[in-house]
Length: 156
Image 1 (tube, helix red, strand yellow):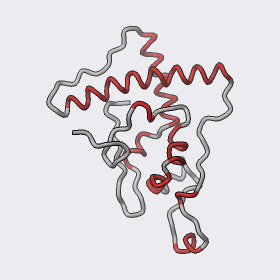
Image 2 (cartoon, one colour):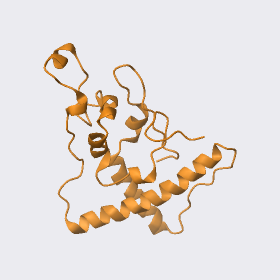
Image 3 (spheres, helix red, strand yellow):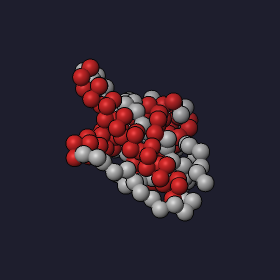
Image 4 (cartoon, rainbow, N blue to C red):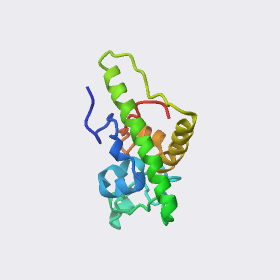
């Protein structure tokens, strides 16, 4: 049985992946910023709470995060949107396969019909990996040591 997103141990739905990236999602859902306060290479403005920071009114939830992709030309934006559409298609298919495998079905993941489609997906993965740090989404912890634990249902 799957856990509803964005709960701990849940699988992000395909619509989660868009050109705005994780930083924009965190700005819309600021309570989840606490899981990324130790990831200063990704979000350098998020720092763990201390009594000093608390006394000056700092809260990670109030820190705006800049988007990872900005100022795209129309042609580049269309290319990125096409790549994301392909990624979401494969991700949706594989997510369903993963969910079914939890109920005992043998997983048979998405298979590409052409070499060009496979290469397109590889390019899409590069973009998505820049927008969404999967390893950190699975392993990031808040100050209490609680792990977010989002699951990516197939190897990327």
